[in-house]
Image 1 (cartoon, rainbow over the protein chains, first blue to last red):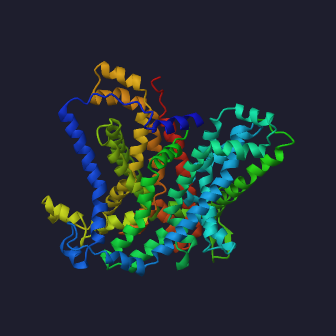
Image 2: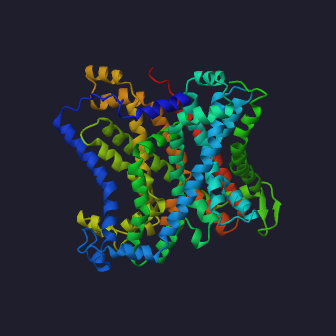
Image 3: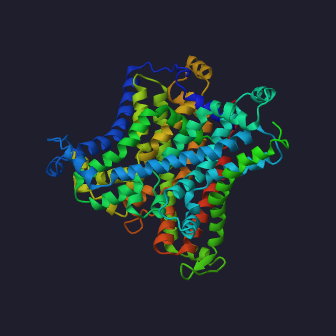
Length: 297
Length: 292
């Protein structure tokens, strides 16, 4: 399984990619290909451009001129939306939750993946199976007991508990990905380390972890995508306005600004900009992560 | 490496915290959900065992069958659309014509956006007041046929299926693309030399060679439909008249709005069982010796 992951991951590595010498000789075919690509590109881009335009129009301009670019660029919409909402607060909360989720996921998963990939012992296969069995479990199937459990602990409105739950559901897939990474490291590593009198602890921290950096980045990025946009669990566990994460904060904002479309559009724009920036900065890593996470033996 | 007396302490220290979190917050709640599906709550504080009564209530509920039907329609349509579009665009990008990176980047953007924002965008596209859809229909001369799709029981689910496809198709594009990239270039080249082009190439070379990824995308997408909650919740709340209610929302409404906790847990068990069954069955069905 690990090998397959590796193979698929390196498949997107565009530097070593073989150029597919396919016969697209006919001009007519070429034109058609570009038409199809562009039509779909427009379908993706138009709603976003339209949102951007709407966010910069005056209310009257929006009603009269649904399609076109703004007649006057109303940057004040952004200022109003920023001031009128707690979008900065929501983002901060989302940053906290996402950061904690990453930390908990990496700290719990890396040592497990290390033991499962580098040691031989009875019951290892079973343990690995149990660990990754959770990959197929939708969080919905656990949400009612989780909700009641957190209530029993009296821990609603606790960003840490929310992150812990997010991290718990990241564990199976993260073990799956990291175990694949670590299995592919050469066996000789340990032998050298032990000849030098290295303990398991040192081997892990000084050799394995640095060599698995890519894998750790991958599971972190997947954790970001999963927790930054999560709606259902956060909605159930957080009710205090000051603690809302971006998705639920945005829900409230939409209800509140229901009639002021331009400010609403500005608020939504502000909410999606971090995601787009993150994607553009980490594009290749995100795509690789998605592929690594999707491939299941 | 072998486990020895000297290192077993470290190994346990490495295994225990993660497994504890996982067992307590993932596995245990799943089991509890199964147990809770056989209980009924008279008040939030007192519950009693009722055997399969909740299951009988679910099977006897017309609403449940409607929701299950919606979920199946949603599942089949989103999977079909996304597999077709994902395959097509993944393939066209794989040809690596000038500018393909830009297209690839663009197609993926919607998948990283918060679903609340996506729901909002599509609500406004469909809205009669300032939406894009109405002027678009006017432009092609079909304006007279416009009805607000989200308030029409016949169209609302279709409208959500389209929004969902817009939202998540980029993942399929990337997955298919990576599958095509993994095809052996020698095989493709020699097929080209033998004169395979266009459809022939796709049917006899590309599909068999990337069958593993096709299989995987179909399974992922089908099971993924069982988790679709956000867009429905944001765009319609399941309405009009439950026309867009899917299993996860049905669970949510019953457990957290009607406080029918037993019924909600039956849904939880059902979603879990369906996810497992679909994965196993589809994997078996689509098993096929690869070419080599």
